[in-house]
Length: 219
Image 1 (tube, rainbow, N blue to C red):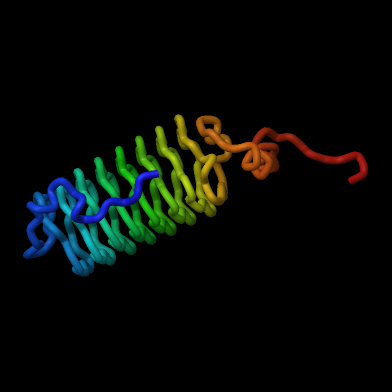
Image 2 (cartoon, one colour):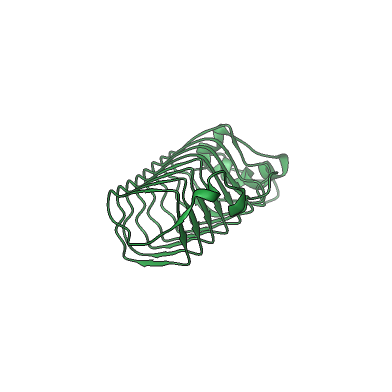
């Protein structure tokens, strides 16, 4: 699998300019480098970030709903308790990032890659993910309820307590997931590909969903 890019690998790297100012709603940011900055309770709702880079940036609280990230590269960016509802992520790459207690319901992610990232208690209900790859990540208590996942893969990723209630999966590859811990919504896996060992591990949950009682004669 391809290694994560470095900032110098970006086709727009030579055009990046340091961020100088503050985040504001609806503002456009083109070829801007956000580096080593902390944003607390910032409001960038509806802002547009195009060909930007984020390195060692912390977002604590705040609002970024309906913001758009187009061709954006993020390294060691942390989002804690931030509202990112209905955001758009197109052609983005996130490396060693953290999303904790983040509201991302209704978000749209297309051709987005995540390397060594941690998602903890993230709300992705009703989100749309297409051509998304989670590589060597941790997804703990992530809610994909009613979300649409198409061409999504999880190589080397640990899934713990992930919820898929009423989600729609199409060409979702879970075979290379390091751990496949589904808390609810097992019926949504009808649109996924899993391995034979994973099938055995999930068999009790599938039996419950189907209403099948498994009981040996001597039990």
